[in-house]
Amino acid sequence: MVPTLRIEAFVPASVPITTPVTKFGGQPVWLSEPQWPVNDAWGEPMRFVCQIELGPVLGDAGRGKLAYVFVTHAEHGDEAFFDPDIALPDEGANAVIVQPGGIYGGSTLPLATGPSLYHVEDGSDAEYTVRLQPDKDPDFRPRRDHARLPTDDHDHYWEQISSDKIGGTPAFFQGDDWPDGGPWKLMLQLSPNFQPFYLNLGAAPTAFAFVSPDAKQGRLLVQDS
Image 1 (cartoon, rainbow, N blue to C red):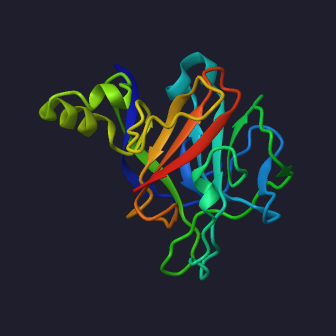
Image 2: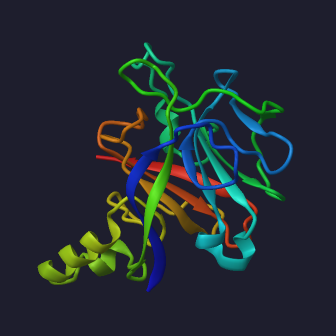
C-alpha cells in the first residue's frame, strides 16, 4: 500500500499565504533564491500553479522541502490560447522546481512573484489551501496487469486511485506514462476541470506531477481524454 493524502476540499485563503505549506495559487514561498521558470519558445514566465510539501510524499528525504509547479498558460481574457506542449514533461512548457537543493535544467529568472492562478469569472487572484484526508492507495499495477483483472476488481482498483491527491499511485488512463529519467514518485494528481480556480490543461485532463526519491527534481505530465 502507498500512503496518500486525498484532497477533500480547496479552502480560499483569507490573506496571502506566506508560509511553506501546500497551497494552490497565490505566490510561491521560496525557500532559496527565486527560480521562476521561463517558456523559452514564448520567452515568457510560466504561471504558478501550486507548491507541495515533500515531507508527506518522500518522508525524511523531503522534510523541509517544497516542490513548485508551473505551466505555460493563458492570461485572463485570452483563454483561447493553449500550448499543447504543456502535456509533455520535457518540452519546456511546464516545470517542477524543488527547493532547497533541487536541480532544474530549464531557463529561470530571479523573480519572486509572477503570473499565478486566477478565477475565470473576473480574473481575480486565486489562492487556496487544501483540506487533506490521509489514506492509502494500492501498489502500482502496470496497465497490462490491472486490465486483466475481473471487472469488479478492476473497477475497485480504479476507484481507489483516481481522486485528486498528494502522493499515492498514479491513475494513468493513457498507458503507463512515467517520465523518462526515473525512478519517480507521484507528488500530485489533479483533475483541473471544475475546480474553484481556472486551470486549462486540455479538454478532460488529469495532471500528474512527480518528484525524484532524493528530492532533487521533478516532472509534470498531462493525460487528456
